Image (cartoon, rainbow, N blue to C red; front, side):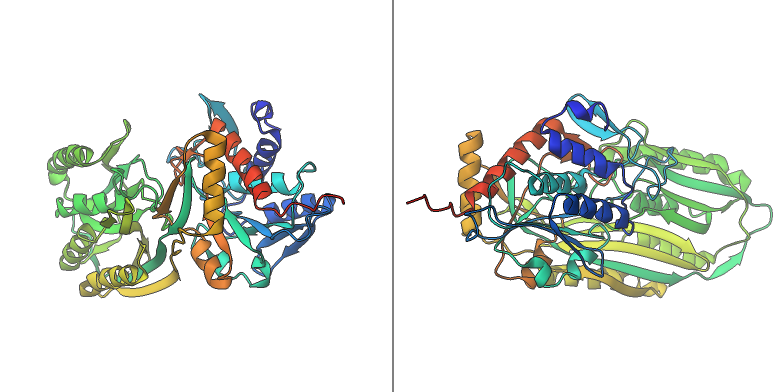
Length: 487
């Protein structure tokens, strides 16, 4: 075990988190982690099921005398978002995440995401399932796959896998918050055919790059001044019509705000000095619009001369569409103090003679999400864009009167002397899908404090993990029906 984590409490949670980080588990590569958790559960006498999608359920039977207690599901996801600094060469499918402790926080020592979303939730659930001192009714861990790329594991769950009375989702990211609702989402991909032309004679190859934005979670951080590298690159190209575009690349996943984006193409060498000055001025303009990290940069540098570039009039049209594509917060819900509807211009990628544009829409109102998705699809119609919605999921409708919420609020106040904040979150949680599969489930979501999820700056607060686990363990106990005293 990592020597720094070995000193932290609660020890069972940190030991399991360390073990989870040691097994590569980006989305689509969760099999090894699921197998390791299953083997650990079976070694401790617990029942294990893995469905055809790879979702894992671990059942702990009721303690003697607690057989009539409700069944509680501890729910989280097995996959993590793989993001690394541009200067870091890291294979998330093969390399473990090295951990370090710094000023009360745990982070990756490799310049990558940490995977505390949702590795810490899974670790806490497993610690509770394996706790020999816990006296409780039937308890189960339900761990899904591919949450970060469209909640695909949750969408494939059967009603049998979700058999239970209460569900505690352990995938939230701020201590002291109890979440009772979330946004639904849709992922839209638009394919655009690229008419091409010959490179003008005498031109030289050029690369234009937006680098080192803060990035972040497209649900949690979309309202912050993070900047979007793909959107900024489009604006840069709009201000540099002399630059002949051959290819674009930027962004990675639909739930990540793009940190980097690059354009490859060609330019008349006589225009280079002018373009550099224009790019420098635009970099200053960008930096005034958002909280620019110290190493934020807009760079123009020599590149290999491309064989073909976009046809000029089409280049003008498509760049303008990218620069004006809706991005960021569309509306706020003032009563709930949360983003109501948003969109993330998540990624662009040239694939042969096609440009693939990926966006992600979220909303607390499913009809508004659909309307915004349709609007963005129509936005690229003038360039012949072919839209495909390849993933969508419903929101989670709040139930502020549930028995589970009342119990959790009362316990939190008793433990910590202050009431928790009851909130709805703009990020997508699996609870909306789970409620559709088992409408009888009462659900809340909570977790410890982690910051900058989905970015290489991700950090997990150590002290909050202890309080999170204490609350989780005692909430499970509070929801039990105590055994009858001996007569």
